[in-house]
Length: 314
Image 1 (cartoon, rainbow, N blue to C red):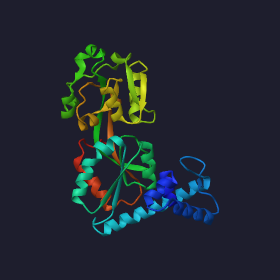
Image 2: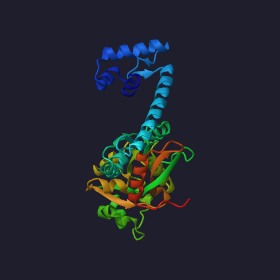
Image 3: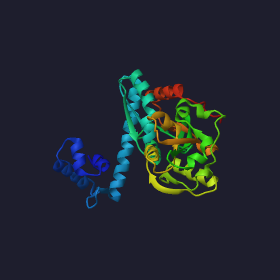
Image 4: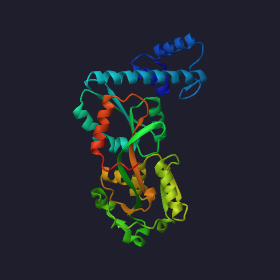
């Protein structure tokens, strides 16, 4: 009950999700606070927040849940994947377009194993994986090599997406990249020229927020081209930036993963970018030293079989 209130940030929402009345839930939490002799929640904030003691309480709950999850994975092995749960994590982009085909293949092969998908930011996913709250995470960020092992799922390219209405497209006409080429993978060939990014130095840009890997690459690419971009909007999701470019708001940097996964955006002109910053790898991460369940092994086998690029040499 305490953990559900913490996750929901509200007694009323927690009570609804637990199918009990709010007074009953409040009374149960108060009994627990009385038992430990300290308040767990600061009820003066909205959403309710944890006290110092409450934070320690929740930390212990999460360790208990991690142990329970590990034992559940052990039982799954004993039952030959006839029961159990696999918890996967990914950002919005990967949860929407990268993981679903793998989850579908896994579920068709092991229909009795429950699959849960947690959608969070990269930094939050790293902490969840470390805490044992998720089993595997798909991400293109660099997680700690000391704490996590990884397999390469695929590589992806960052592309420049420019509103087709922008006059600068006439100056850059020789570098235009048709959307069909991206969807068919033709943009990966050496014969496609890379656009000089400096051509767009006076244009408005739509960027992701500073903690995002794409944002860091966006800024570095512009600085390498000799200019500081004029950012008119900062966003959480790459797909939102893509849609705003389609509406004429500004230039964005998007991955070929996204272009291939969503319906064509008719009002966007694409350009190939140069340099290692425009290329990144999508990894499947797991925590080092933790018990690897049969379900995790089976999912990793499916991921290895379906990956579209060889693993780099050590």
